[in-house]
Image (cartoon, rainbow, N blue to C red):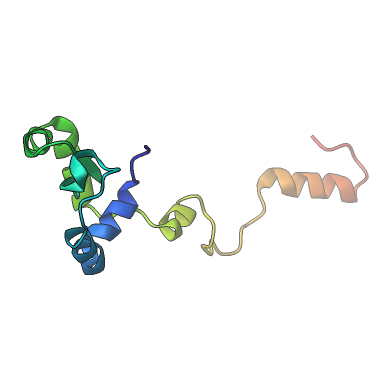
Length: 111
């Protein structure tokens, strides 16, 4: 089973609907430990309370909790990082473009 992405877990932790939905779950036979022991930060079910406690002390869990403290990047921020959706103003033609334009107007070979 693939783990959930950080942005999905971040949204779940901030949503009261998800937390109340999780707490109102009935035991499910398909989940490890009947779905009783769940780590909200890692979106993982565990067989027993001991395994959940052990997981809480692991590096992977601590790393995940630390990464969830920061707000994840949005698609808008990712687009802006590569220059999409931003107005960079009028660009001045480069010197090489100007030389090529002059050469074309004089019917000379460009550089």
